Length: 207
Image (cartoon, rainbow, N blue to C red; front, side, top):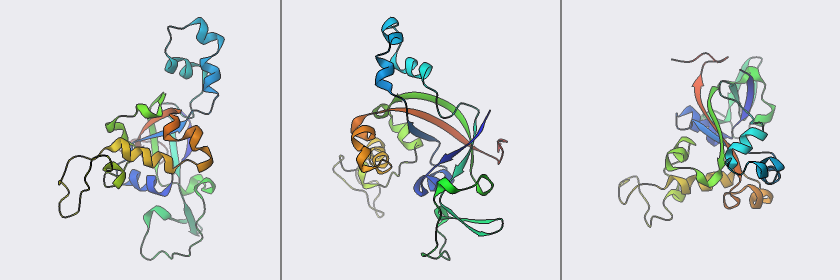
């Protein structure tokens, strides 16, 4: 077991706090095409691509790892931290928030235990997995292809949201515009699928 940091943007931190997010996808940062065209692959054509990538690439996390979430924050006092995801009314809009990458471990308030790690293509995500990613079911992207839009007065006016379409938008919002051709939804990159559950600070299960 290792204790490692993991970064989430403000929207995803809120999804974790709300209990809507228990999974994240991260780009496989290896030359996957070279791996799939490697001598090993040619010698073992019966082995699935996912198995070869899992064998020859090192995932960023392993089942059992404990992760502390780095999020946008500010240090208000010696051992007092405020978090942008809380969005309290008393928080000034002019606060000089610090990027999540700079958050020290001692400021972490969200701890996660990795329960599963696997590799797959981005577009292989299912509706259930899109929900586990923290996709907002009220996002208009979930309804653009349904021909209807729910309203607060009549949320059941037409059908269920398409969570994969919502995740498509969510994923692209996390990718730099210059990288969309390589890592965006349409590029269908290989990703690590990392499932997790909340735990106490240091890794002790809440249950």
